Length: 294
Image 1 (cartoon, rainbow, N blue to C red):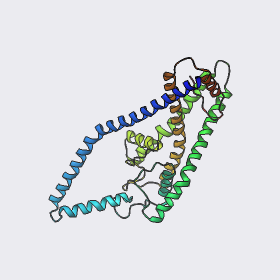
Image 2: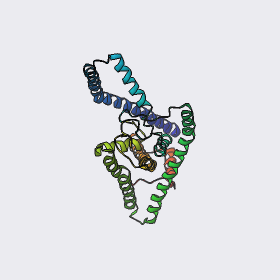
Image 3: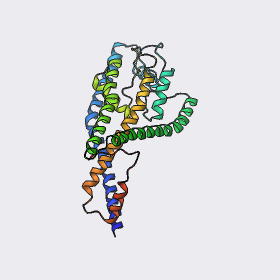
Image 4: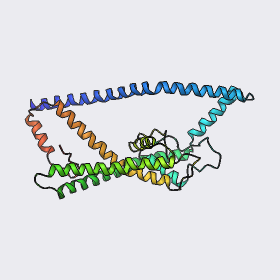
């Protein structure tokens, strides 16, 4: 009977989690539609108006010729060629840019502004991602374990009766503060200065990149009117890799906190013998897990 109760609660918790996840996706879709659809319509109308003005100013062109030219521009953009500037623009496939692209492949960011156009490049990209993505996950997992181990060692070093909770809280606060400064606060300042963005745009790019969302609306080192140092995008790729490890650990901590909070509010007091056994097993310290202070 106790086992049946635990299974029923687990099933109920899973059902609530699934329904909550679906509701969150539906809510996001509704809000994005409300916020962006009208702006998209205005942009589309403005673009059509500009095309009409262009045809009025250049009467030697007809609408079909203009549409063909727009199609050429779109094809060039899809192949990673910026239609601004001229043929002397820096190559998208020099070593620094190629290194940056390789980083976006294995980290699954995939901005979408650049992709291989040759058959051989596409085939290589498939196999490169096939082995590179698991390798990247293993690398990030190992880095996460290393960070967790350092925090646990710090906790054990300062562990004294009556001070454990304070030390845990201070260690966690220090970890969050240093990581936030290194990966979320200072990089947008650099990107804003180099790219000419506002700080808000730089922060937006930083978070969208490190969370591997990667819309591609903001990408560093793509402005043809700017002269970047050769290692600029390579350094950005290194920042992405280490930032991913930190932010992934933060997301993991956030998921654990949210799960514990929801379960505490869902489960009723008075655990059964089976639940007590499970709770006892969870009290066994894990050398690779960060203990969150209550």
